[in-house]
Amino acid sequence: MVYLPTFWVFTSHTAQPARLTAVGTHIYHTYYEHAATILLYAHTLDPDFDAAWAEKRQLVAELRPYALKGNDKQFADLCIDDGLTYFYRLNDPLKAKAALIDALAYYPRSPLVGEHLGKVNLTLLESYFLKKDIEQANLIAGELIEASYPSMEESLRIGIHIALEAQQYDKAQQYIARYLKEVPKDAFILEIDKRLQEGDRVEELRLLFRQK
Image (cartoon, rainbow, N blue to C red; front, side):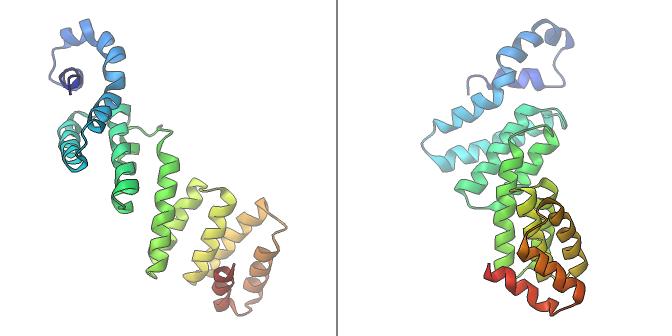
């Protein structure tokens, strides 16, 4: 943690303006720009994961008051690492999602969040579906469609299925209309659409997806 004091000096709002003017450019490009990388690397050197994780939780809490929402890539990177740790190591997708959304609050332009957030949402959707919490699964399906994850076509198919499970047939038809603009010759979705329009045993349509 040799570089931490320098990180604190640069981010502190109480630091002397004259001092920041004199050394700010040098610190930003040589230390602050890579502060998150240095801090995260420091924690990987500790073989005791539990101890390193507890220390990192404390570090993030201490740095948060100095982080700048909307334009703080360094703090966002720390949040992203939290999200990946929660998801891949601690098997806690809810906390992983919260951390990744937190990262976007500090750096909305981060290219690292989208892919991981999509994977987390897919895991949550599967979990909610298995628990028969269709309401929550339906909300997550909407987020997947908004993010076009894993792709626009796949997210819309997921949305159609979950909307049918939720008996939200109007929403299912809206998703189908969007899907058929992308894949107009999908025979399976065309059959679902036909039966919805005709009111043909619509309560059974969700079972067709389960058989796919």
